[in-house]
Length: 42
Image 1 (cartoon, rainbow, N blue to C red):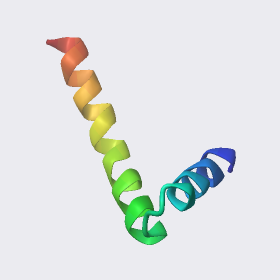
Image 2: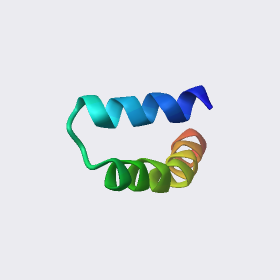
Image 3: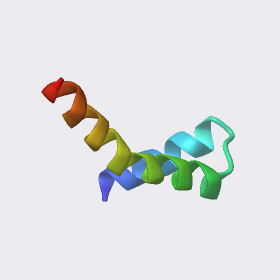
């Protein structure tokens, strides 16, 4: 829960559209893990 609140506060402080910011950040999470795994294997 604290991580989500941090994302929300970060978006607000930086003047971002909250919905667009969260959508972008949360959509990247699964991809980042896959990329990190691929880089570790390569």
